[in-house]
View 1 (cartoon, one colour):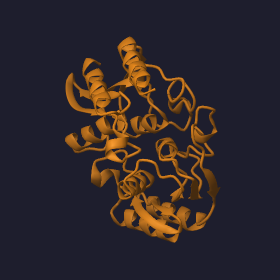
View 2 (cartoon, rainbow over the protein chains, first blue to last red):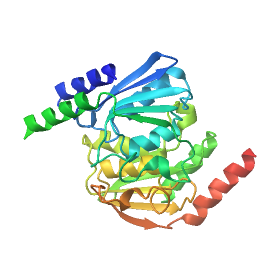
View 3 (tube, rainbow over the protein chains, first blue to last red):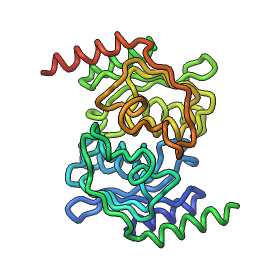
View 4 (cartoon, each protein chain N blue to C red):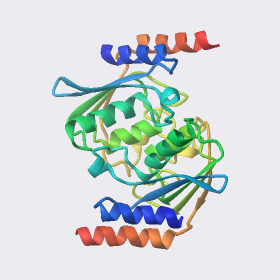
Length: 142
Length: 142
């Protein structure tokens, strides 16, 4: 999660909402990603999507079986859907997101019968650091 | 929708599930996309995501204000989330998808209070052609 938080800080330095993600397989880092929709002109450029796309490219497979995704904020519906499609085995996220999260809030993407793959979910690791990064970012922009 | 269906046929010719999408603005085609996760080693490579990313690149803006998305199948949670982030004004889809759809089924992404942008939704245009393309694709693969 320290590496995901470092990615989030990098996003903030580029003027993007500070969210970072890392894909890990068998204890080794496969890819990192950070939020960047504005600079990349890409509404899908969330940290999770970037990390998942990069990992799938690196592993030469659209399925990331056995991989873990570490991300600094509760994934939105788009990213939760991507986690399902990628068959991520374990999801670790830092802060929860009542406004945009879709794991424990809103669409609760993993909670429907039609959901073909449910990752194990662990929340709260690094929560304080992640929430503080986001608070500082939005405070400075006000 | 005819163009989206042509994109779907192209996906089938490449061995991918036949789903196609088109982004339109002010009556003009901005981008097309088709399903391609296997060949592209990208679990996010759904027709809608490809069309949205391509349109945002073409317009130099991560927000596709005033754009329409035409797609041959009811979007999944990932794609519905991307439609929200992209601020797609109107969504037209052909066939509904009880198994994977997240507009009128499952996660119903646009139906939550936290959903910051709800497109107008029109379903059923080209439904028969789209459903037949999908049926034929899966029949031939069995």
